[in-house]
Image (tube, rainbow, N blue to C red):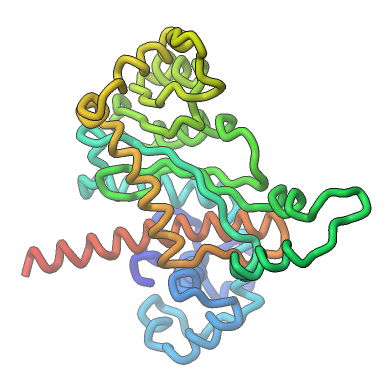
Length: 316
């Protein structure tokens, strides 16, 4: 809570408006939201938790506990894209100052994952599909469920598991559309502008390689496995896709070029789902995107808190 409050106080304004009641600062409300997400509570549950832990509120200067409506309204403002970008910019500066990025040693790993749009278990959904009758159109409700699945793409520092950029969306589809955006956001946040970027074959495309290598000066490493394999054994089309075929030919070359660090992004996705849950409580697409952004920010706060504890242990 202290780390989240200190972070937000450095990059967010003190109040949303000069005409607001000024009962709580934005940094205090963000700290409460981070605690809510870390403890896997609802807004009402977070209010009850804070009332039982008044010393937490006093530690960040709050004289009273915000109710659940205040926390919900604060989330709708603090988790807008402009505010999230500010927080991620400050997190990247913190990671750079503490030498946690390590992009000169390990690459930026990009990966995407899906979250559940409700708290029903997978077994319950499977049994429900087995017993459910099909609609008159002949189509099952699974396609409608897939179109509503929340999707999160992240750019992760493989050396420290700090998330440098994110993209949120809804539904399954082509994943290459957000790849350049995720890499660009991470690229502009870090001081080292010459690093490697690794991604899974779902992001494979010649335009993606050209954008990263020619426009940003980065080294892209993506297996050329998109599309149907050639029956004649001919090399992939495109200069950089053919280069990837040679570079990733053996397990030793994959390890040497740094592609094996791509799994660090999958590790981060697993960490967030284990620590904060794989289901979202939001009822609308916007609220689910907001929840995913809060999970990314809370994950980074937890990483910085752990690093701060290590530094204190080292000094003692």
